[in-house]
Image 1: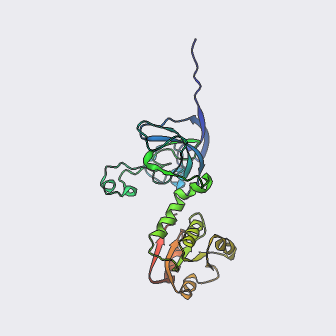
Image 2: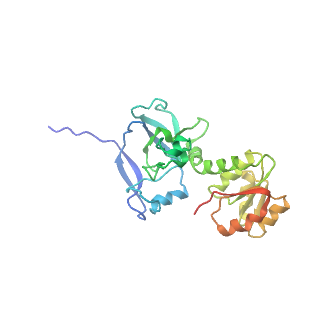
Length: 270
C-alpha cells in the first residue's frame, strides 16, 4: 500500500509576472540550506521599493517572486553550519539581504556595495509569506522590548533616515529640516528629535501640523502657504535638510533654506 506523506504548506503573496498583481497561493514551507535560517514571519513592512518587484523594474528578477524586505520574525529552523543564531531568536531582515564576501567592496568591509548584493524580495523570496529563508549575513537581532510590527519598518525606512542623520554632520541644537511626513519623513522627524536637533518639519497643507508636532518637530512649515526656504532662513538657516518627499520641484525650492556649509540630503525616491 502506498504511503502518503503530508507536506506542510504556508500562504504567500507572490507576483507571478511583472504587472500581474499579488496572488495569494499556498507553497511548501521551505527548508533552510547551509548558512541559512528559516524565519517565521511575524510582520513585514510595505515599502515603496516593493514596486521594483511588482512591476518588474529591477532587471533580472526571476518570477514568481515574493516581495518584502522589512521583515521581523522568529528563527524557526537553522541550516547546516549555522552556530551563532538559534531557534526561537528574534531577528529582522532588511534591504541588505547578503553579500558574497569575496569582491573588492566586501574585502574592504563595504558590504552594501557588494558586486553581488542580495536583496530580499528581489534576489530571493522576501517577507510576504508565513515563513522565509535568509542567509545569516542578512540577519539583525531584535530586542525583546520592540514589537514585531514596530521593528519591521526600521529594517529599511528606519535605517534610511537614521543613517542619513547620523552621518549628516549636524550637532545637537542645529536646525534640521525634514521635507515630507510620509513613510520616511515621520521616522526622520522622530530620529532628529532624539538626536537633539531643532527640528523643522515641512509639508503641504496645515493638516499635517499636529502630527508633525506629535512626532517631535519644534516647527511646522506649510510649504503651500509659506515660502519654506525663507522660513528656514528666518530660523537661522538649516544645517541639514533631509528630503524624503520625491518631488524635484519641492526640493529645488528648498535649497535656499540652507545655512552656511549646510547639507541637502536626498533619501526619497520615485
